[in-house]
Length: 53
Image 1 (cartoon, one colour):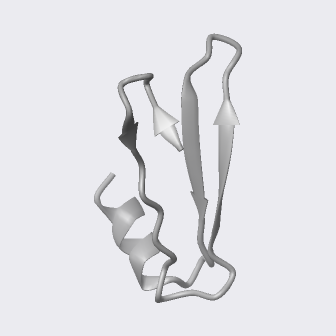
Image 2: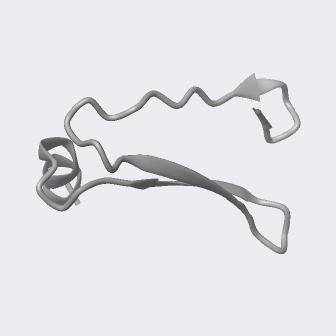
C-alpha cells in the first residue's frame, strides 16, 4: 500500500505477543489514510504502548 502519494510503503508485521492482533486501514473524508492496530488487553506490547502515552 502506498501512502501519501510519494511511493513510500507501510509494512505491517503481526504482533507476536497476542493472537487476536489485527489491523484496519481507514481513509478519512479528507483523504488521510490511517492504520489502526488492535491487540488483546493483556498483550505485553499493547501495555507498553499505552504506558508510553
